[in-house]
Image (cartoon, rainbow, N blue to C red; front, top):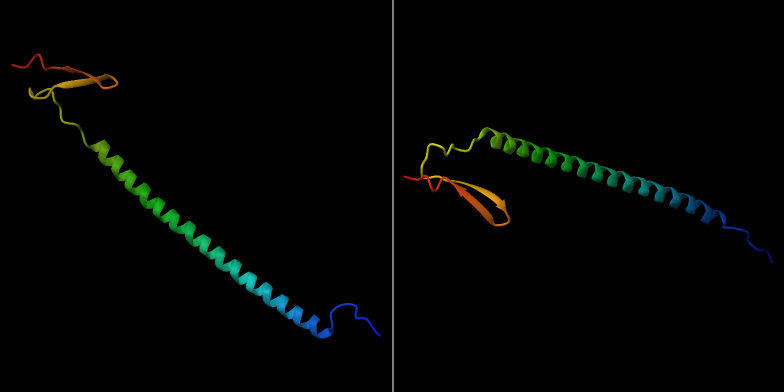
Length: 96
């Protein structure tokens, strides 16, 4: 009786074809995953740019707006925080 030493010709050919198909499928899956990750990076960058633009506009608006001067208004007093929940008020004793 003769013993076989390895796969037959039929199995060798089909395994080569199946190996090639598996490599092609793995390549396609890799390309799809790479495109999805690249798209995610682009979207994150886009929304980050929008966030940076809004922060810039907010800082510009904050810089350009000035608090009204209270020196001319006798109804407004000044207060200074001295620590914790303690405040010291100035100007309330000089009211007419």
